[in-house]
Length: 246
Image (cartoon, rainbow, N blue to C red; front, side, top):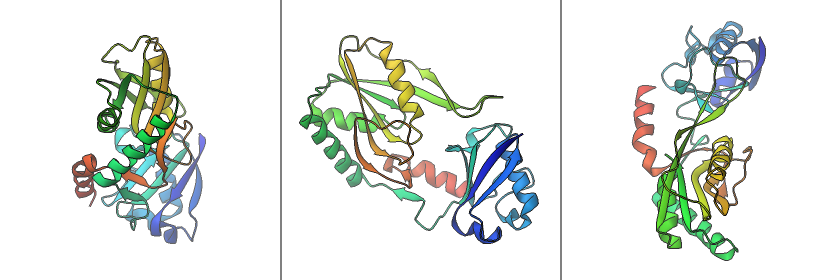
């Protein structure tokens, strides 16, 4: 058994006597939510008897959507929140926002001594920003790499693995690695480590946004944000998930 911190966002704290954080002992995130429900039955509006979020609510386990995880996956922190969180938790980024972020990043790169020859986008979020930056910087060579995060049985925390190898040669070249957001920073960090095995001359990193808690701050970024960012190329996916959870 381990200590798991559960954070309650929105108006949910009104159902826990004003507590925004609750600590429970559990072996998994779903068991943690069942323990939470046992202490605060009023939260049955948000959590079912299996410890899963009810329609209209989301659960993130150490920053990962619980729908991507097994019910037995361990957890350090669990966030429980309404899908519609009053516009505070979600930021809907427009194409104009993206273009402005790309312009700011390109200006920073051009003002620096780094002259990238190749852009590598981290699938899937880094593909479109990478393509837009390539246009801004006049770079022809664009590749992709795909890294996934998972929590294996008995493993505390996220572990990255390579799902899609690099799609072009970067040997002896200056590489700009691009993603949309540096959240935990693990994906970006692992991607840099992986690219270094392909013997580039230099690697720099760029993301549109970073989170205050990221463990990896890229060399170039446009803005720091606290919200869960929804990009214009993700809106259909987000709306499908929203309808599913209503």
